[in-house]
Image: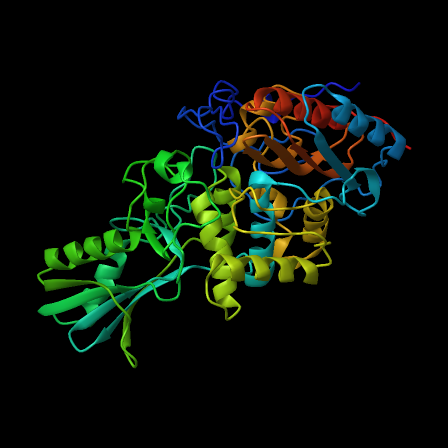
Length: 475
């Protein structure tokens, strides 16, 4: 067994002190009771590599640098590890596993890997892949204001991360060294442009959310995520993902009952402060032939996807799926979002047999995804230009987001990129891990049928992933 040293040990600016402090079991679709608002860890190496990196600044782009000639593990050895996970008393009555070589797609182990089951928040991986493939990593969610006479209309375009004042435009980085998507653009930025284009005087203002017909809260979601702050309503526009100012994107918080109206009222207040006399008309539809007087752009989709994958943000994931449908010329509804996600994945060559989606985040217990589909999405992403950076958007094991505390000081720390998933009775993990021989393996584990509680099944999955990471088991 080969010993490993996590990159954070080698770089003074990347400390392991905070690695265990962000103990989310699954930060945006967690069953109640297993949450913390502890600080995030320090900036991390952005890539999976065969040896530790001494990098602490953000570095977007594809995960490369590993030799394609690194030995592939023996399928028998990998299959034995998968069988041990299924036989583990801590796993449920339905434990399905699929492991493939990330470079070639060669199947190394499949325990009912073609059988779909509840994926929980690993659904977000499919949403992210489909959105990146169809829209491109540079795509932005745009918010505009149009004018017809003295009537102004704020037009929702899918940005749920608007700042209540001026946006930072990409100048702010989070505690992990990644550019902060939240607050990229702001209400005051719209105000600046309106002031430059519209003479100060009496105006009315409404907000147009007609591109997002809803339901704003998916019918397939349980009620507790909304009441407990795990998710919010999606109306095509929001301030700070519908949370109060000052609540970071990485934390829970009570959500706006009407996020679009909050944005509208903030814009009205901004214009009042500039000398306009503003009448607030509530929700409405922009008049035909209106003139655009302001437009702001969100963070690029790559940064938005990083946010939703790292912190497992249900609200942003659901909105992203609906924008995918909207950009395809469809109404931005959950059904159309699911259909378009499936269509894009199939076009990438991903198996969608048995795939059933009722939301883009994974809170619905009706969702059905096979481990084969999750691994197929990972493998297909590697070869496609728009999704080649996917692994850099997933959190780094032992160091970032939802896999921070779970893999701290383990053989996988710094050598794993993965998406978690947890609902009552369901535990899942899918991602890419580097073996001791330097080979990248894509895997998906979906566990179903457990009693309440995530600690034991998570530990069993983690031991399986760490065994893959320690695998010097070339065929």
